[in-house]
Length: 246
Length: 252
Image 1 (tube, rainbow over the protein chains, first blue to last red):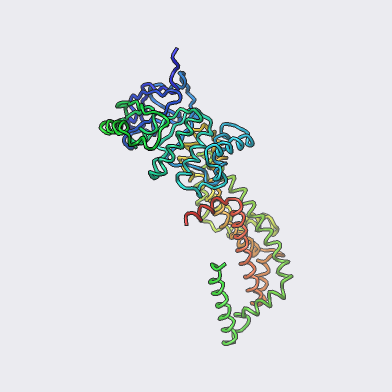
Image 2: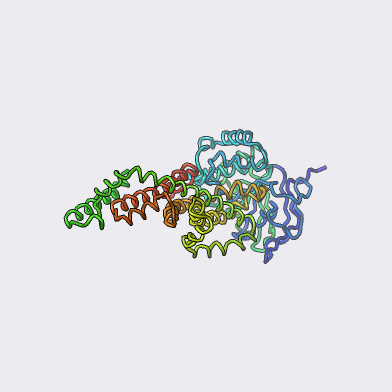
């Protein structure tokens, strides 16, 4: 039997005063990176809020590994555009928070947090307070906190949206490295087409509000991807195609 | 250190002008004593001042600690239960239009001239800035952070402990700083209602005896106590929330 998708969304609708999401269906297989692109304010964040269970959907189903779960809060690693690190906690304590909320003991949580920081190149900043970090470093720390939350599915809501182009490319590679090492499934929203193509296995294009899926495109660029790939013919071709859709 | 040299110099110049003016214009000592005379008065009555300082400081600390407990209790109550906020908040605001000192005679009537009525007065004067600041601190927590924690499946209790409490500490200390200054003031004024010992009553006695130099000396001591109380809070704040001060440093 075929393995069910990691995350399957079927006919999802959300109304919140007005209709925000209309009949969206898509699926994400285990280990995939899927991007959702669409114009600003089209309801990408609402979609994530519904998936993560902060918001109730009106219609449709959300399945994880083939079964519906009503209590989804705490099921995903969720990250926002702003790093939302706690200014009163040092970097390692912020990362540790994910483990703590999951109910791990302090000592164990600390060991795990420190391991994670060492593994992903943030150990030197472990004792900094977030306000002493650059924007890119903050997002790295926020990403590690999301991972520390110990979920195999990440919802990343325009995580690099407020970074400059150079930092953003560095973080793309950083994310891909984490993804590969930890075998994560990632769903990612962005309004940057190149970012979506570079990172993903599949791109879903959303319409303006109320958001529906216009189309999906499979990105068959080989992995591991390098920054230079963004100038390849194939890449540019996909980019052109997506642009015409938006 | 350089930062403080200019105001320090200014203070010295003012004292110098004051001293010179008293000598040149031959001002009567009972109207305006020279700084040197005030200092001599202070030195001569230092053991008396210390004797009266102890209860004042004790009252101020006790009143302030009481105010902290009451404030934290009220603020947390209003934070946790919407209905409590609706009930308490208006009274809290109205209570600020009452100068609590006018309650002093009543409290004296009920509780006598002892320690208790004074502590109540001080706590009444001090609790407001702490309560309001702490409550505003709770309310001011970034909504995105709350959303993040909800997505993580954190319980209300965890959210309070992990976010609201630490996030509101800077606001709490702002309130505490104001309250600390009030506490000394409250102690002194509450002693005017009647006391055997304390800087407030000592001040009244010195005034009635036309010992103006001593009056100035006592005023000086009370001022230094108030500044000391605020500084103490500042030091505690810097130790307990270093991240907040780092942030200010980064921003500036």
